[in-house]
Picture 1 (cartoon, rainbow, N blue to C red):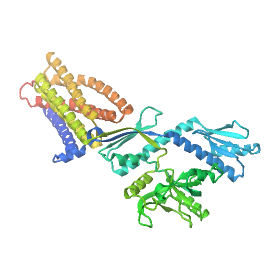
Picture 2: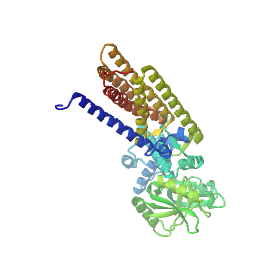
Picture 3: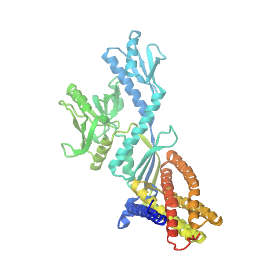
Picture 4: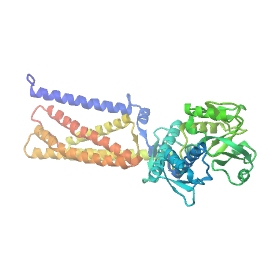
Amino acid sequence: MSGIEPGEYMNRRIRTRLIVIMLVTIVSLYLFAGFPPAQSKMEDSIRLGLDLKGGILLVLQVATDEAVRAETDQAAENIRSVFQKQDIPVRQMSRKGIDTFVIAGVDSTHQSQLQNASNAEAMDWDMRPGDESNTYAFSLKPSRSAAIREQAVIQAMNTIRNRVDQLGVIDPVIQRYGRVGSYQILVQLPGVDDTTRVKDLIQSTALLELKLVEAGPFVSEAVATANYGAVLPADLEVLPGNERAAKSQTYYVVRRAASITGRDFKTAYASRDESGHAAVSFNLTAGGAGRFARLTEENVGKRLAIVLDGKVQSAPAIFTRISDSGIIQGGPAGFAAQEAQDLALVLRSGALPASIQYLKEEVIGPSLGADSIHAGVTATAVALVSVAVFMVSYYRLSGTNAVIAMILNIVVLLGAIAYFGITLTLPGIAGITLTIGVGIDSNVLIFERIREELRAGKNAVSAVATGFSRVFITLIDTHLAALISAAFLFLFGTGPIKGFAVTLVIGLVSNMFTAVFVSRTLFEWALARQKTAARISI
């Protein structure tokens, strides 16, 4: 520092710190309110949660048993297909429960082929001799069963998120809910008021399958079954038709295994059929198109059932080879326009791996959210004013220093919330109020230490420097402990609790800046302006 007087250096240091404080203040205000400040900007900059904006809260239960059952049926079908290719006779193949299937009538001479088929197609299954001779039972391994259930929940969450995103909902919350193994999902949709449509879109399984028709239509399920001597072969099933497609209920006998599923769809969109009625057109992926082409080429003259959620929507005849596209009709009258759009939406977003049930439903009106905002802001304002009056009354001009630091802390906190796109909830407002208390507590610790140094006979400049330096470690300890608590709240809490934790973390970090950096700079600036022996009002 040669050539620079100590006082000049101190003034430069203070000016630099003041410039930093001004820049942080301006940036925070711009992020929160814009420039010039506008009410619309402030309303749009902070994302409001469900409890403040209003909307829908749903708790869903995923029927994971269905996913396990589907895996069992698929494994049995794979084994049956292998046996057919190798001309191995099987008397019967049936499912027992949701995670076991039984093969009956396998001759002992074919046991090695059965073992090979099990190793190739049923690696996740434990094979054991059945209760009767020449009978074998395949049971799904518990680890695989648990993995299927977990995957079903994850896939359901992704599918629901895709559907909600296509609805244009801003800041939805879709996450796991409840204890481990409950397989529940929490859905929060702020600003949504059409509850019925949203629930229908979310709950729609939209399981689309293309299956070859073996016989039908029949007037009843009993008649369809009687056509096969009252016992259907294991590879066939009876499905009802769409009621709108005929004047009375019809039933079809179709292949149990689907040739094409919704996973093979590349896109789906609302369109019109040849009669001008609303319909849904689709295009297939490369893999799906190849299988669809082989299917239609090998089965010209047969009918292909378009099955949606277990109902045959239509069963057109195959006249020629079809490669990569098709159309889903809603019967003679077609779909309703909105129905076709919603069906296309759920097909684009993918099928749910299992059905869901609604365990809880709450609708929060916007007026209730406005009341919550008013109550939260009022509580924060009352806390701010009360603390400001106390600090100024008890610490005099130094209390004004604390009030300025406290206000700047809130400004920085709101700017950070706006910048990071954090959703503000009612617990988040509580976090802001708590931040005010933490900030004032920090200033009280510093001020009391400064008072002790003054009573010990130190001058004002030395007392301020010593007070801040000796309290700094204490502030680090208390803030670090609070940050650890907030981290646990964020990791193990649900939506509103996480909002509180995030707000608290940002408030603690900004408080270290305002309570130490800003407050000390204000003290040093006030002392440097005094011409005579520096004194401090505290």
